[in-house]
Image (cartoon, rainbow, N blue to C red; front, side, top):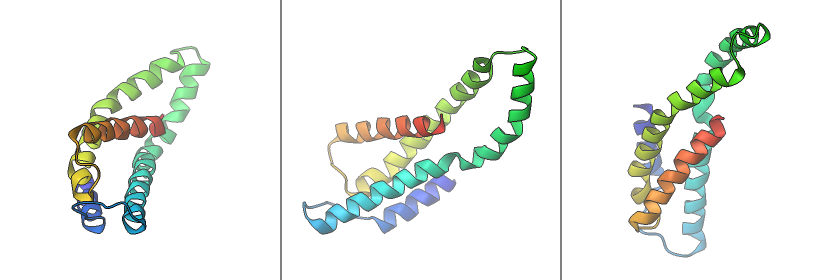
Length: 124
């Protein structure tokens, strides 16, 4: 729900049906990309407190050789993939055409894949 509200606010701030090649539309384009990047960077902050709480258990299990480190990190990463795919799809579907990026569907899919990649790259 929070993603949809943020996307609606972004769509109203950066609304444009078609972009021209000039300085004003270039600034609008760069502003919307910067906002999306900041949103991606701040997306994982909500999970930070849970991760910090689990660190003590992780180090205790590692020091006593109960489980290797990958046994903790791989399942956590795999469980984040469906949410990341949904988040990337919703954000791109709601904001891509309203902001006025390229109208070709191929570029929309590439933007969706890039959004998913950078969301997971920042989280790891």
